[in-house]
Image 1 (tube, rainbow, N blue to C red):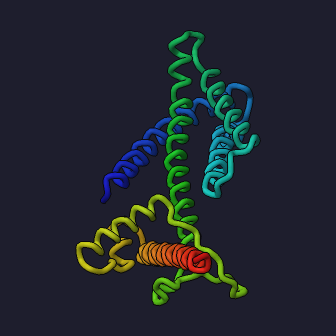
Image 2 (image 1 turned 30 degrees about the vertical axis):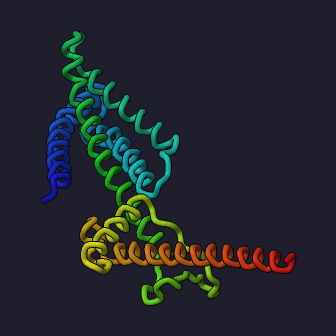
Length: 246
C-alpha cells in the first residue's frame, strides 16, 4: 500500500474509533437530558439522533458540494453550527454545576464533532482529487489527436472544422520534457503506456501528452519554415530593387 493511502487508512480508522466512543457517551447524555424533562423513553431515545443527525446531514451536503466543485452554502453551514452547538449544550446541561463536570460532559460531544469533521475533511480531499483527475481526463478526451499525422496533426470539432488544441498543463509539460529526454537517449519517443506509468497516470493520458507534444513540435517547425521563407522573400526583393537601380 502506498504511504499516502496507508496514512489515510490509519487516520480514518482512528477517527472512526474516536467518533464511536464519543457518540455512545454523547448519546447517553442527551438521552438522560430528555428523560429529565419529561420525555417518554422512546422519544428520549430519538432526541440524540435528531441532534447528531443534523450534523451528519449538513456535513454530507458539504461533502457533496466539494465533490462537484461548489462552495458550501449558508444553509448547510448554519445547520452544522446549530447542531454542534445544540449537542454541546445538551451534554453540558446534564453535568453537575462545577467547571470540571461541565468540561467532562462537554468533551464527548466536542470529540464527536471534531472526529466527524476530520473524517469529512479526508473525504472532501479525496473528492477534490477525484474531481481534478476527472476534469483533466475530460480535457484530455477533448484534445485527442491522431499520432499517425505527425507534424500535420490537428483537431476537428463535431462539424469538422479545424481548431487549435489546448497546450500542455504544467504537469503534462513535465511529462513531455521527460519523453524528449527519453528520445535523446533511445532514439525514439516512448509510447503512451511508458509515459503514463512514469507519471502514475493511464495509458490514454500518456498518449495525449505524446500527441500534443508532437503537434506543438510540428507547429514550431512550420513557424520556423514560414519565417525563413518570409526572410528569403525580403532578401530577393531587395536584390531585385538594387539591380533595377543599376
